Amino acid sequence: MIELLKALSDRQRLRILAALHQTDELCACQLVELLGLSGATTSRHLARLKATGLVAERRDGRWSHFRLGPSLDSQPLLAAWLRASLPGLEGAGVDQAALLGLLCCTPVALATRQRQARCCETTSTNQ
Image (tube, rainbow, N blue to C red; front, side):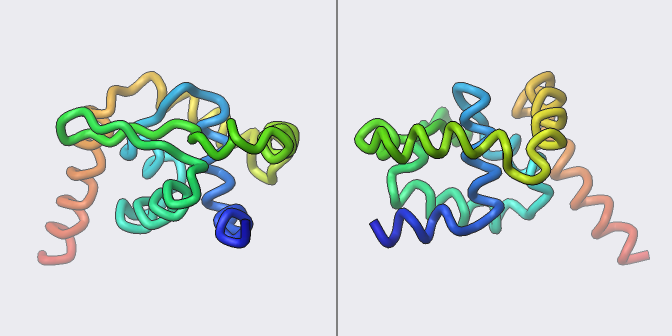
């Protein structure tokens, strides 16, 4: 229970849960884009949520897709509290609008755009 509460104590992890609550499943690159964090940081947040069972992962080749996990099924009071609380999270409206835009892009297009941005940043600093 302590690990579960620790996982819920971070705003970025709550944002991930809120996004997954609004969709069936999101690719890791969609979550990176939504949060505006690095892939490594987003991955650490997802690992923490996975360890508690709040998030489940499905692999499809090189793609990782995430959805709400089994902990919420086994703890109906927690699930009800989260579902009632997540829409009121500060910035939820902004995230919801951004999420709608992200759902229009394929994971491949997002990953390509993210790689190109990093590539361009590296190129511009080397000049």
